[in-house]
Each structure stands twice: as structure tokens, then as C-alpha cells.
Image (tube, rainbow, N blue to C red):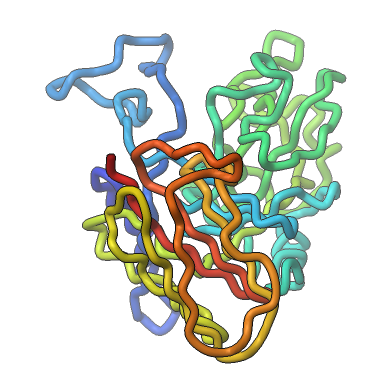
Length: 346
């Protein structure tokens, strides 16, 4: 697998058994990490002509834009990924985790999967951790099961990815898979269990086996070996991320209806939002800000098949004018969802 990094997105290319190459684009999300380290200590964030150790402390870019869909799923409008809002409270070895994801039916969708390492890393919130906020390193819009770690302390799980860990050791190829620690990344050092790597660390575990075979962890830092880790599934959402100049294909709009671009756009103070329905149905149309907070409900109830148009006057549910910026119009009919970006300019 080759990882090609650009300023605001990355591309993962992988070779298939038949010799063909597939590629996927993902948006790099600002994780909130604001410190840099060399091999042994914290350092001043490097300048353009200095060595770079892989942290994003100088990256101030795409912010997560979480939208609670109200059905047990969260859509990140920055990446176009839909996430399982809560894990199921169970730990699995890697093969069982794959089976769980492939058989999950949630919110009317059956195309769930284990996230790859970069996808899962995109929802880590480095401003949160068990030590600093008493929580998992993830936005509170998500739910994470609490566990008891190797030191006997309340903590949060490791979560599997679908990414196989590359090993240079003979006989070890494909034996382990990557996980991301949303709690402490424990290791056994100097005769005790401590948080060696910190919340948000990416490590690897054997895909199968008995964790009791590793009473003092594994490797020079005694990394905790759990083997049975938790799962937060992901799927591609039917949204346009709205991120410019990445040459990303927009997701298809559901066939049951069409949400058309508002006009004028940008607008002040009012805009028109056209939509088409193939069949009569219950429709919800809601305005959100980029923090995923509800601003105003425009439509809620039965609408007949045909052409419709809604006018938004730039106010919230309390009648107060909203500020300039980007807003999201979310339309829901049954299990189909479409989201459109609009600009208020004052």
C-alpha cells in the first residue's frame, strides 16, 4: 500500500490479486494535535526547512463537521463518512470484527465495514482523553463503552481497523492488524502498567490468539496485547462534502427525491430551496450549522409527489437572524438523506 500525502487530502492505492490497482481519496481532518515530538521529547513545531516527524501541529485545515442523524449514526460532512454512533459494548478478535461489520444492519443500511486506519484516525479528538477530560478521545456526539485497563483503571477501548499491519519478520506477515486507542495506550515498563503512547495512538494487535499469553505486553515498551478489541463501523454517506479542488466524486442523490441547489446562493436575507418528490411521503428538511447544531426546521410532514419550493429567511427557530457563513440543508425521506451546502453572506 502506498500513501500519498497532499495538503488537504490523501490517496490510498492498493493492488488487487488480479494485478489491478484501486484508489480512494480521503480528506485530512485537523485532529486538534498541537504538539510535536522528536524521538525522545517534545520539540518546537518545525518550520518549513526543518525535519518533520509526522505530527500535524502546524496543520490548521478541515474541521470535523458532525451531524447527528438521530438514528444511531453520525455523518462527518467534512469526510463524507457515516459512522456508527455507539459501539455495541462487545470486544472481538479481528476476524469476528470483520464479520460483525459485514453483517451489521443499522439505520436502513447494510454496507457497513471496518474503517481503514486513516478513516478511524480522522475521528480522534486529541483535545480529549481519559487523563484530561475523563472521556474517550472522541467528540461527545459519539458514545464509547468504558472498560477497565491493565492497571485496573477506568479507561476506553482500542478499536479495530481493517488495515493489516506490515511486518518485516519472516512468518509474521499478515498476522496483526492496526487499531486506534481511544483511551490510554498502555504498556508494561519498569515493573508497572503505564500510558506509554497516549490516547489516539495507532498500534497493532494479533488478529487472533489468547491475550493471557502476553501478561507483560509485547515489544520494547511492553505494549498491551488485548486481541479482543471494539468496533465502530463506517460507510460512505450520500453527501457532497463540499470541499473544493480535491477532484472527489460527489455521492449520488437518492432516487426517491431530488434536493436542488438553493437560489440565490450566496444569499441575504432569503433563499429558495427547490426539491422534487417521486412519491408522496413524510419529509423532513432542517438547517444545520457546520458544528452539526440544528438551526431551523423548514419542513416536517407529509408532502405530495411533484415539485416543491421552500423559502428560508435566514433566521433560526427563535426568529433570530443567523450570522454569515456556511449552512447545511438536510432533507430526509424514509431512509434516504441528501445534504446541500448554502452560504449566508451579509
